[in-house]
Length: 226
Image 1 (cartoon, rainbow, N blue to C red):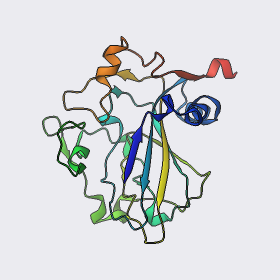
Image 2: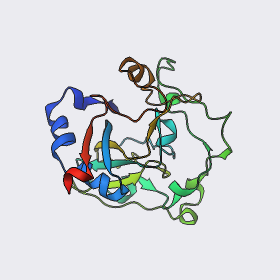
Image 3: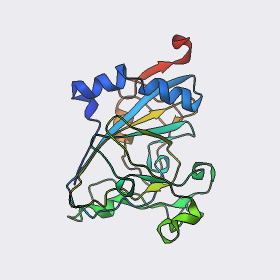
């Protein structure tokens, strides 16, 4: 399994996607935002037959920002079967509860502690639901997808399950994260993954600020589009 993030700062094709594709406009229209800043990219590559399954989680509680107007665009670069695709619990972004999210640092096979860590136990209001125990009750959805298809989802929606692959199927996914009107910088005591707090501070961003600078550029504005 391979994972990479913020590659747009060094790969021209990724940068072209950020600034020249319709992605920012689509994010703005779907979220009803007046402006859109780019947050970060993440690339996931898994070999055919991989049996790793993405734990169920929400995205925004891990991030160094806070706000409802956040979304992820999930784009497979290879054909994906429904049973191998990322799955979602519709409407779960509106629940409002603070869940005990999974610590993805536990997945590091070397047991190193220098990777980003989170611990929600002190702030969690309830445990994360066991969605795999009864996916029908939770209304779980996923789709067969082809290169060029994408799913855009609010970053508080419960999602997971992707990556358990058939022997004849690999997985390559490009994801991009977008920030709208109500988003502010937030350094979370429970930890952040990915933790942008150090580089944000280096660039003069502090908690309560709107994202900006060349790290999180404003890519689209409704006023300019109109």
